[in-house]
Image (cartoon, rainbow over all chains, first blue to last red; front, side, top):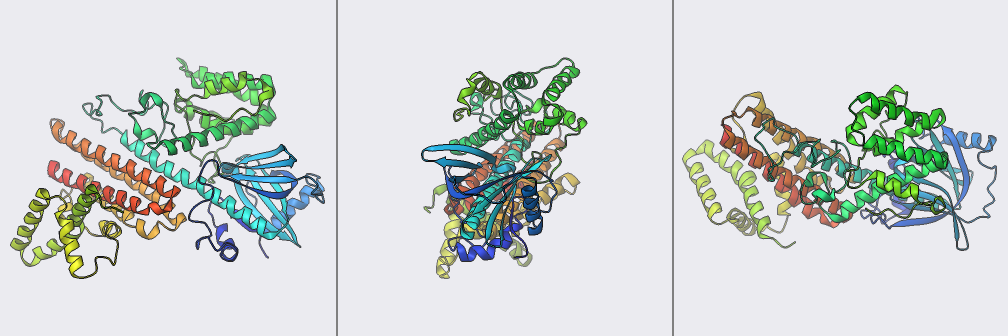
Length: 384
Length: 214
């Protein structure tokens, strides 16, 4: 094989290469390689596969050519030389890859005990590659954010399993992309519904004026996901999901987003730092500054807290900043040289940022997490 | 699928717009009087007996023994983007009104592609993105028309605003049907029906603007 089988989340161009394999291997799938009915539709759906965990190669350049088999093997060879991954994997421990529409989770499973190795949210995955290197079936997952990528390296016993994992990850990519596109349509409809004709006499049915900054739509901007605001459940349907199942899906997805970010922070911050983070985030979102410079001062404190080594994580904070301060936050990030410009869905910029209305809150949620005993991490499943 | 009354009424109105309308327009070139008489008759009967146009066309199709050879809902949707008649065109030449004509035609054209693209996920998702843009452009165009209505004419403004709200309501229904479809791909008929409603609402906007502004 000249090239590895790459499954690119962004353009799905890589899908075409694997089509001929899947028409043979997976006859239940349609001509574009997908089951018409996704196996990962329900939030509880997940699949498990037995793999061998080789390791994680850090500091992969964002712009590395991911369609090139030679590049992939070169990265893996570098990883071996720098001892990020072993030369040989013993396969003694039972490693399970669990895949759902939200994330890939890698775990050791010994008898009844499970140890989490890594969890990668689907929206952070740039591509998945299967390379057959002289009978060694390598599965590589490139993931990360606009600043930094990593390569998760796994081995599979058989080509069929590797191909199946790739195909199933592609399904999950498609679900994420589908959700994002439908959300885009909803957001567009919501935005145009509230766009004004400029006439002061035009009011809605309830005799109150709609505006993006008004009470009925607190904190929403055009391209942002929304959660149902219980206070306005019978109104403002433009910003909420009419169907409770799909509302639950959007809420669960955002909950997963939050959990994923918090877990990233947990790995990098001390307990005191996390507590300070909670206070600062609350300050940002509840801020009504008389002097705009006061908000900048809070941003600076957040930046100082993250520091130079962790500042790349600041971009991940965007989904949790309320609309009213979102643009200023973006501006602040740009001034600090933290870029969000990446056209791929693996970047924060492409993925619709979400803001949460005050009634479905980040601060109380965070308070719940921060005030809980740290021994109880990870936090219990979120419910809204 | 069981034909609900509301769906039958929708099909009847679509048939008037995209089947009978264009045919009568062609007839007008040969016999204006006959075409206008027929048009008035169909309108009157359909208003008195909602769904008449549907029964009429179904009867013709049965007589021709082709009524079971195609799906009417899908066909009306495909026709909805390709057929246009004078009745649905705004005659005012100002850019604001011509822009509305263009945006309405563009949205209907994209919606009419749904039956052929719905089973190709990648293509269908791109179409949905186009639909989102087209809806935005259409409603922006409606807003510009509303802004041009004289300030003293609040009645017309309100009528147009109500028409816009109705359109938004059906847009949301369409978006919900899409979600259902992505959960269960057997729900394609629901997507076609809601897309047909959206085309019909687009035509209603055009008719209302003609009525209030021309």
